[in-house]
Amino acid sequence: KKLLLSDENFINRRSIRFVCSKKHEENEMECILRHIRNSIAHSNVFLYCKNRKFIIFDDFTKSGKQTARILLSQTTLTNLKRLLS
Image (cartoon, rainbow, N blue to C red; front, side, top):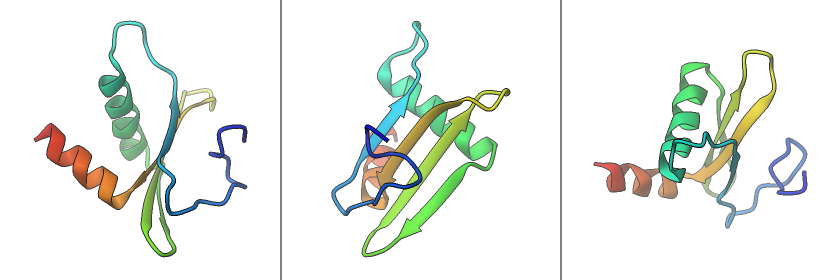
Protein backbone atom coordinates (compact mmCIF):
# COMPACT_ATOMS: atom_id res chain seq x y z
CA LYS A 1 0.00 0.00 0.00
CA LYS A 2 2.81 2.38 0.90
CA LEU A 3 4.27 2.09 -2.62
CA LEU A 4 0.81 2.34 -4.29
CA LEU A 5 0.96 -1.23 -5.61
CA SER A 6 -1.80 -2.85 -3.59
CA ASP A 7 -5.00 -4.16 -5.15
CA GLU A 8 -6.87 -1.14 -3.78
CA ASN A 9 -4.71 1.56 -5.36
CA PHE A 10 -5.72 3.49 -8.45
CA ILE A 11 -3.40 3.08 -11.44
CA ASN A 12 -2.72 6.39 -13.11
CA ARG A 13 -1.29 6.84 -16.57
CA ARG A 14 2.16 7.78 -15.29
CA SER A 15 2.59 4.70 -13.09
CA ILE A 16 5.61 2.51 -13.64
CA ARG A 17 6.42 0.80 -10.38
CA PHE A 18 7.87 -2.38 -9.06
CA VAL A 19 8.74 -3.97 -5.78
CA CYS A 20 10.60 -7.25 -5.70
CA SER A 21 12.91 -9.24 -3.49
CA LYS A 22 16.39 -9.52 -4.95
CA LYS A 23 18.79 -12.39 -4.48
CA HIS A 24 22.30 -11.34 -3.46
CA GLU A 25 23.99 -12.81 -6.54
CA GLU A 26 21.76 -11.16 -9.13
CA ASN A 27 21.69 -7.63 -10.50
CA GLU A 28 18.53 -5.52 -10.78
CA MET A 29 17.78 -6.54 -14.37
CA GLU A 30 18.12 -10.24 -13.57
CA CYS A 31 15.82 -9.76 -10.59
CA ILE A 32 13.08 -8.08 -12.60
CA LEU A 33 13.33 -10.62 -15.42
CA ARG A 34 13.20 -13.55 -12.98
CA HIS A 35 10.04 -12.22 -11.37
CA ILE A 36 8.42 -11.49 -14.75
CA ARG A 37 9.29 -15.02 -15.89
CA ASN A 38 7.85 -16.56 -12.70
CA SER A 39 4.69 -14.47 -13.00
CA ILE A 40 4.12 -15.69 -16.54
CA ALA A 41 4.95 -19.30 -15.66
CA HIS A 42 2.47 -19.32 -12.77
CA SER A 43 -0.28 -17.35 -14.56
CA ASN A 44 -0.02 -14.30 -12.33
CA VAL A 45 -0.11 -11.71 -15.12
CA PHE A 46 -2.94 -9.21 -15.31
CA LEU A 47 -3.92 -6.65 -17.92
CA TYR A 48 -5.40 -3.35 -16.84
CA CYS A 49 -6.94 -1.22 -19.57
CA LYS A 50 -8.20 2.28 -19.03
CA ASN A 51 -6.78 4.98 -21.28
CA ARG A 52 -3.53 3.03 -21.61
CA LYS A 53 -2.69 -0.64 -21.18
CA PHE A 54 -0.80 -1.72 -18.09
CA ILE A 55 0.54 -5.18 -17.30
CA ILE A 56 0.81 -6.30 -13.70
CA PHE A 57 3.18 -9.15 -12.84
CA ASP A 58 2.78 -10.78 -9.41
CA ASP A 59 5.21 -13.38 -8.07
CA PHE A 60 4.77 -15.53 -4.97
CA THR A 61 6.74 -18.14 -3.04
CA LYS A 62 5.41 -21.69 -2.79
CA SER A 63 3.98 -20.78 0.61
CA GLY A 64 2.04 -17.87 -0.88
CA LYS A 65 4.20 -14.93 0.26
CA GLN A 66 4.29 -12.21 -2.38
CA THR A 67 7.84 -11.53 -3.56
CA ALA A 68 7.13 -9.12 -6.41
CA ARG A 69 4.58 -6.83 -7.97
CA ILE A 70 5.67 -5.16 -11.17
CA LEU A 71 3.48 -2.64 -12.94
CA LEU A 72 4.55 -1.69 -16.45
CA SER A 73 2.84 0.17 -19.25
CA GLN A 74 2.63 -1.58 -22.59
CA THR A 75 5.09 1.00 -23.95
CA THR A 76 7.61 0.35 -21.17
CA LEU A 77 7.35 -3.40 -21.68
CA THR A 78 7.93 -2.93 -25.41
CA ASN A 79 10.97 -0.75 -24.69
CA LEU A 80 12.32 -3.36 -22.25
CA LYS A 81 11.93 -6.04 -24.90
CA ARG A 82 13.75 -3.88 -27.45
CA LEU A 83 16.55 -3.20 -24.94
CA LEU A 84 17.05 -6.92 -24.33
CA SER A 85 17.00 -7.92 -28.01
